[in-house]
Amino acid sequence: MLKIENITKEFNLTGAIEDRRIALNNISLDIHDGDFVTIIGGNGSGKSTLMNIIAGVFPPDSGNVYIDGENVTKLTEYKRAKYLGRVFQDPNVGTAPNMSIEENMELATRRDQKKTLRWGFRKEHRDKFIKSLASLNLGLETRLSQKVGLLSGGQRQAVTLLMATFKRPKVLLLDEHTAALDPKTARKVLELTDTIVHDQHLTTIMITHNMRDALKYGNRLIMLHHGQIIFDVKGEEKNKLTPEDLLKKFDELENQDEEELNN
Image (cartoon, rainbow, N blue to C red; front, side, top):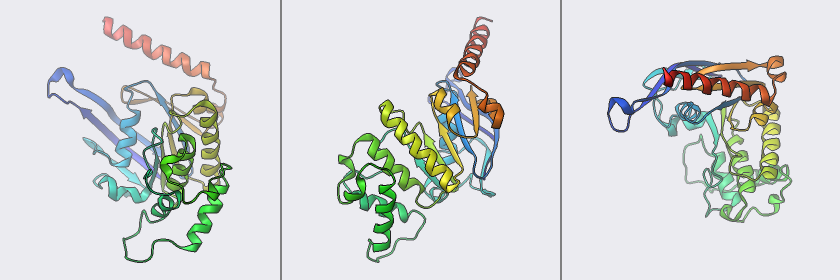
């Protein structure tokens, strides 16, 4: 469903050689239909850059991105949006705060459609919204007219998740989407995420700093370091891993970095 082929991305804000930073270093990755991949890595490992390359926020310096067999490398972010659903770390991103829940959800149903002058709201859509919101068990199905900006962070992320998956995207991108939430709310949103992903058989990539969540959710785990994939595990091998195993790998990488600096 998603193929990353020899992607390299370099950043250099000043143009000076010493400020050159390779965010992604010739990485390749195949993600199959229905895979739920969790991605971990330290700061600067390339996680967010990879997500933005997939989403088309900026182009790679070299390499290609394929979604469902189509080369989308040169498609702009807004043209690529019809293939993707994305939920960001900040609950305030992804929805229009001054619009109602229903208005936001109505917009989500038109993500891949041409704009027309037809009346905006449909009864069948409203019925679907109510049913979807009721599944959250947050009482939002009776508050369709409430402005999204008045919702709590967890409620807003839950609505954003529904919006991102209304049109069953080819790939769902979850960019640390529970990092800004309190632990109890984060757990609720993650459980909801897992249910939606499995019920709709969505191909999903989730970035997280929480190693327990990286192990608990999904069928595949990838670790990035200095813009390269240094660990890729799935199935039973992934199920046998513990947070302590991942911590050990992080420690080994830090020790290697220190040795390289000293040499």
